[in-house]
Structures are given as structure tokens and as C-alpha cells.
Length: 168
Image (cartoon, rainbow, N blue to C red):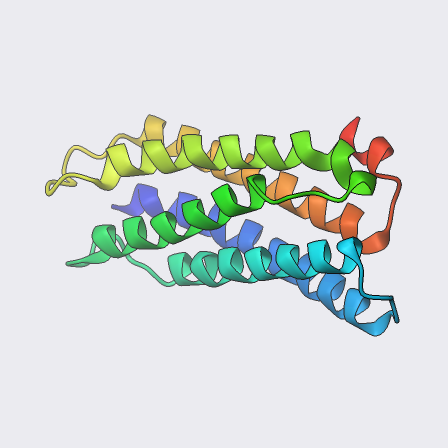
């Protein structure tokens, strides 16, 4: 199971980067005085989804899939993350942020691909036939989803022009 440690370390690095960026983004958003409107509600909902995704991601980093129950715990955390990504993709979006909707959908699609592959890899009782190639593909989709999530968070929290971000 040493092969899984490489992927686990990559996921840990991605998670740490996401957590740092989102923490700064949330603190920045909280420090600005804004009137309560659709934008503020949208940011609050985004923050809630980010927190849910980060909580599951941190839990994933502490899982050893080679231990009894580790694979099922991993899948449970991924289930939680999938619900959050789906909720994020299906949020109502203020008109100012409509150009970011495709980015949110892409993050959800990437995560769902990772989710399906991880379930395929770890869904069985027997991990002796671990497929490292599939794990690499799953980790790549996972990384894409998290990168898109970070990009979305940066844009929303910094009030960057959403059209310029959605075209990157």
C-alpha cells in the first residue's frame, strides 16, 4: 500500500493550500463591512460549502486506507464532499457572479469523476488488486476540482471581475 502514500501526500498538499487560501478569503470577507444583499448571502453560502469540503478533506488526510475500515471511512468522507460540491454547483447565483457558474459546474464535474473512480478503487472488500493508474486519474480529477474551487473562492472573496476569472 506504499503507492497510496504518494497520492495521499499530494492530496494533503492540495488540501493545505485550499485551507490556507479559503481561511484568508473568509477572514478578508468578514473584515469588510457590506450591506446584506444577494452578494453577502452568496458569499455566506459559499463559505459554508468551503468549510464542509475542507472538513471532509482534512479527515481524508488522516485516513490510512490500508487499516481496517480505512477504505470505507475514505468513501464516507468522499460522499460528504460530493454532497457539498453538488450543493455548490446548484446554488442560486447573483447576476454579478453568473459568469462564474461554469467554473462551479466544472469543479463539481471534476470532483464527481474523482468520486466515481475512488469508489471503484476502494469500494470492494479486497484492496490487494489496487490499481495505481486509476488512483492517479482519480487524484488528478480531485486536484482539478480543488484548484477550480480555489479559483472560485479567490474571485468571489476578492471581488475580482468574474468575467476575467471565468475565461482563465
